[in-house]
Image (tube, rainbow, N blue to C red; front, side, top):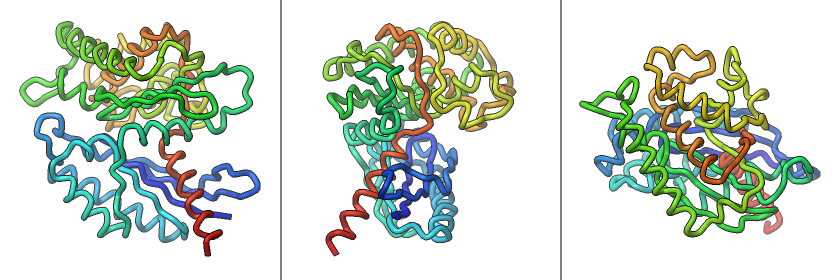
Length: 323
């Protein structure tokens, strides 16, 4: 039995998974899985730097996670950092802080590496299902970027583009330092044009339209699923592998983009940290579905975090065999 810890630090949230990986099954058995909204990417698109208050929020979460990892006795920890820390000129401050708290240096991975880990985490347990046709298109809508991966049992093509929910919100929906509630038609049109240009870029290397099953990952997608099901609270079991039809995604996206902050915050399944950015995230999902003609999205709660944990387990096993 191998016990591993995985941390995924993105633009909007930082997440922890501590899991056992029994060698006979090779599957993850969760011991602790949690998420904290830290908005590490606050202002990065505009300033090119990680804000001091964003770093402190992230380091506070890391201190909480360090205690959990120690209590559960993980053999190996892998910490992966994605879009915001790739883009920041002061990312060395981030690296030093994480190293001091957790004892490991964060891996600031490329978009292609991020995509491969997301694909592994999302599709490993889909293998053998005859109701989901291949190839899959795995779409991970993050805070700063969105990863596109097409593959069957392994990755065929991948691309990361800068159309995350935080980046789109800050770029298009903020006026005088505040998010417009609701956004104006001109703001939505400009955001849509930005998303479409990024999809053009993704299609240069990833055959998006060859996909037969769209698998959607991360908070924007899971929140849309929770709203579609009218859940009284966020429910991971109900959301995982739910299937949301295109018409419902369009309806929810249009509603979110018409709503005020108070109306979005009143949605029972809405995390407070997503209230300002969910409209942009939903529009990214809707635009992808329209681009490829998807009739539905299969929603997965397993994503890059699970991919990181699988990789950490492989490394731990390889280390044992080498001893």
